[in-house]
Image (cartoon, rainbow, N blue to C red; front, side, top):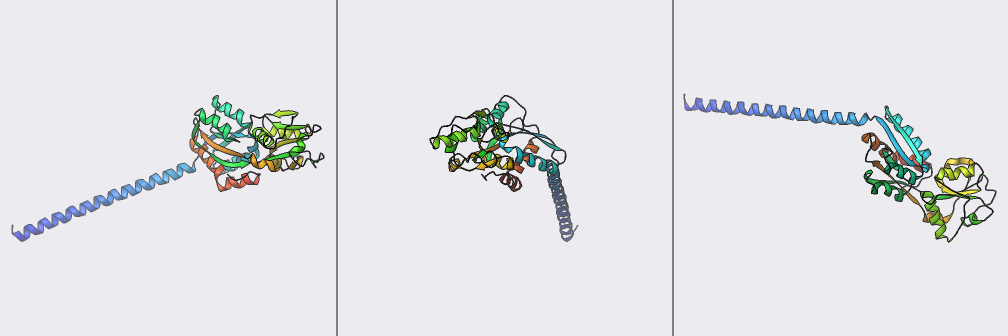
Length: 274
């Protein structure tokens, strides 16, 4: 075989090897791309197919707005269900640390959230999603002419407060202490809705509740703002719980609460932005 023939043969071999290599690389690239695309499509599909029931333990003052958000969530994710347990944040925290099954906890104060985090029952760090301020709820038309926090010390008035262990009660006490005022309520209630109900049923002349509760009650009560409430604003944290049964669905509900859409519902109910 001549030198020229050998050179031509070697060139063809190298060229053939190069083509084979390129074809192999192309096949791998195509395979990787297809795998990535499939994975991406699969993840997107999975995220769109949330399922299961999410159990949310939430402060009583969140009842109206969270119920609205729960319905929105179920409409957006067919096959899911959001159930709620509303009450005093301290009682809810005690239930969670006692083993009550729940996926999400939304508290009316960092103090009550700390009960859950200290017990190791939270998954990740809680995030503040709204704030709330106190207001005085009076009988419709405010017949007793309540105009200030000091007016509630009138012994002729039947005033109701939340229990001091409940966030709304602790905030009310903080406002009273800052004003150096003392009053003796006719009762201490276990959550803010119970305090408000006393006024709605005319079993009390006034109650110190949240602005959101006065807002939700409509014309069933009157509302009186007082400047001392600015010194007793409560932050509301929310967290995924460690033993959540449907983690992805629970995370998606928390995301809705913290989203612009969720904030619109919450601020519309009278909550303050975090």
